[in-house]
Image (cartoon, rainbow, N blue to C red; front, side, top):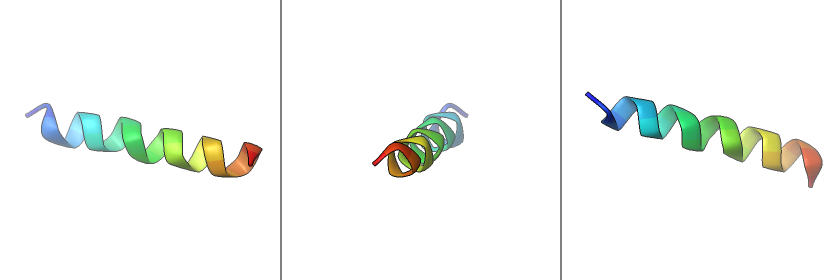
Length: 21
């Protein structure tokens, strides 16, 4: 059940990175 967790982390990181970019 760590699949959705890793996906969530990646999604959050992507959004944060996009905001900074």
